[in-house]
Length: 107
Image 1: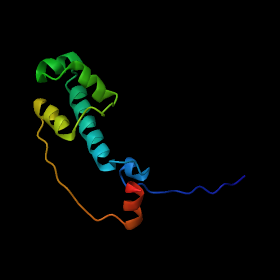
Image 2 (image 1 turned 90 degrees about the vertical axis):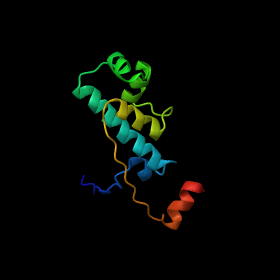
Image 3 (image 1 turned 120 degrees about the horizontal axis):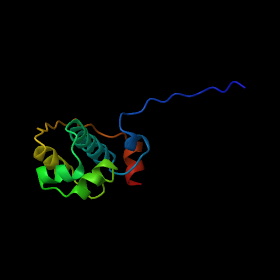
Image 4 (image 1 turned 30 degrees about the vertical axis):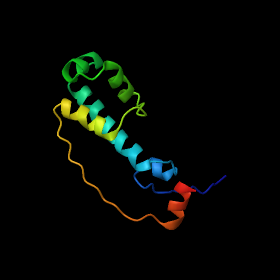
């Protein structure tokens, strides 16, 4: 059996590819959280040690590691990175949505 496989190139944002609400916010949170986890891993910090350094509860670092990001805002994740001695530079590219994409999100 020879099935033809269709390859679809993603947008770079899996949340947008699946038409999830707030796709850009979700993607940004995941990128910031992954950087927090990377810093913790590079420094070999436990969640308790990270709490001692930042004043952020160790349970919050556990949520970030899972990742369970519902309780986090983008600015809060940036603040945590700052407390871990990380400088965060943010840039935006804003483009108009295609009509059917916009109606999909709001409809």
